Structures are given as structure tokens and as C-alpha cells.
Image 1 (cartoon, one colour):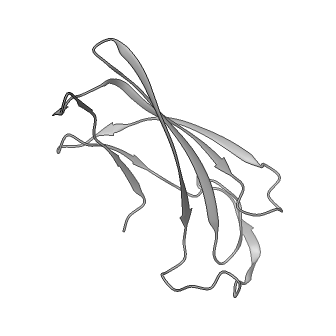
Image 2: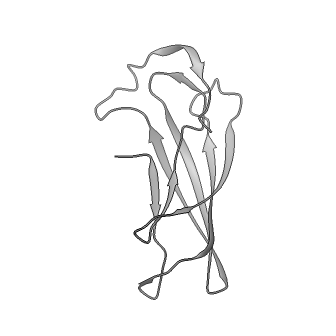
Length: 116
């Protein structure tokens, strides 16, 4: 598993390259102690060699505990044949290994600032 989001754009069943694909992320704070409750991140999507577009996600909240989980609301903006589109979805991301118990979490000595 990696920290990348992969996108492929299609029209009428065929893969197309959209104009100016970009991403907007609203990252909700993962801990009540974080003073910034929602961060907004704007970026372009990066084309890859296999007709995909990629966005590499980071941790957007201040990390106060060993394990974190944050909610990301994602909007992808793009144009195909002069028509503008937006796709909206949400994901949760965390740094815990499978089977980790978030109730058995430890506070960090010093909070770690957001990566982005």
C-alpha cells in the first residue's frame, strides 16, 4: 500500500487526457488539540506513463499521538472536450499497521507538524 491516489479519466469507454486536472483537499484535523480544524490543499495532478494521474498524499494535521487518522474530502476538477467536471469523494488515511488498536495509543512527547 502506498500514499498515492490514482486517477484515470474516460469518455465513452475510452481513456482520455483531460485539460488541467487539479485536486482540492479539505483535510479535517485528526486531533482535538489541533488549532486548525480544516486545512485546504490545492495541487495539480501529475501524469504518469500508464495513462493515470497521480497525487501523493501527505499527513495534513498536526500529529499528537503515535497513530493518527484523518478525514479527507477530495474534489477533482478537470475538463474534457471543453466541458468542465468535478468529482467529489472522501477517504480516511492513517499511519497504523493492520490490527493496530487506536484505543492503545500513546501521546507523543512533542507534536509533529503537518507534512504539507
